[in-house]
Image (cartoon, rainbow, N blue to C red; front, side, top):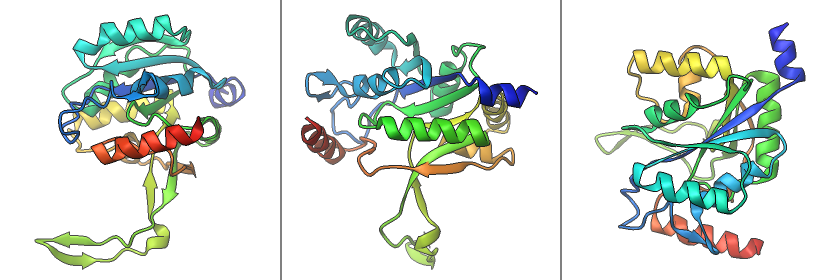
Length: 235
């Protein structure tokens, strides 16, 4: 009965994680880097503000950015931003800090990288819909390059390219499932690289929706240049 109600009346909260130290950005703070006249993280948050399937937003960031970002969201008229909270020592702790502020009314939780400013409404909508149906979902795109596994700089295997996917965010989960998965990962000190990995670790399947090449994560100065090109195209 509970699953039926979750599917019939879903309420999806979004946790936007923008608490990284940007060590690969060569001195540029990617959270506050400008796209147009607004910081990069603003565009990520605005995408969820504009999507009718999202009912609230929690932003996780560094301590020194909490006040300026909170002021920016308020002055920009973003109504769904419920809280701006401090990040943790790593991504998992930052996600947990954000999830702790999510409304108990939320049936699903979307976790999105604050460094992905160009996420489309289509990606958000499709991934929420799939997560409501299946319990766990994430957008992904096919891998273009041939991928090798290696040890000591020697190739150990070449996985078939047709089965490989590059997973993006938002990664969206049933709220109870995700909380249980985070607790398990924390208790077992699992080394996970994304939120899907937490859910996979408790034996749950994650289903993939269609991602987009434009939904890039800004990690290096080159990524920022590409994001600016995409942004200018959209304008």
